[in-house]
Length: 173
Image 1 (cartoon, rainbow, N blue to C red):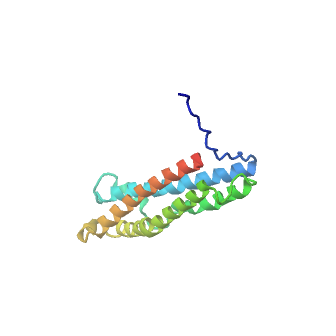
Image 2: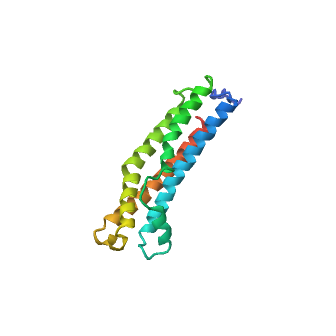
Image 3: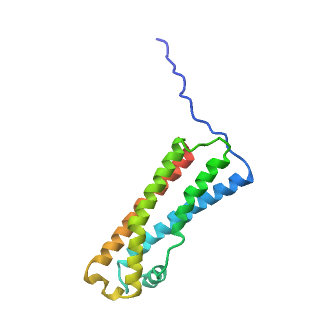
């Protein structure tokens, strides 16, 4: 019996754009993703440490991390689509907003941003308030513990989203 061979499915092949402008946009896109998602991951780790209380190991680090103010490093997430769309524009037609990996990337970014805006950042603000003014009595109503759990859990989810986005951007299906 003769072996039957099937033609290989055509692969989507993108020519790799070159040039300093494209390289700078790529660097900024990747840096925003790493800094933004990294800051959210650290927020999750510190929220988990905050559950140990003001006398637990690392309490001074928790106090420093959750000092009142906006976590600007985490807001670098907003640069990801800006520089990503800049990359599409600078690719001179090699990529388009209709490419599967671009659509998937935008969807994953939107999911990450919603989780950050709805769960992580409001919880982070409440943790900041508690840590800076009454961490010693935080266990009395259970709200602080719940905030810490939600923030750390959401940070784990966002790490998964980052990993998925990283794989999609590299594989470019």
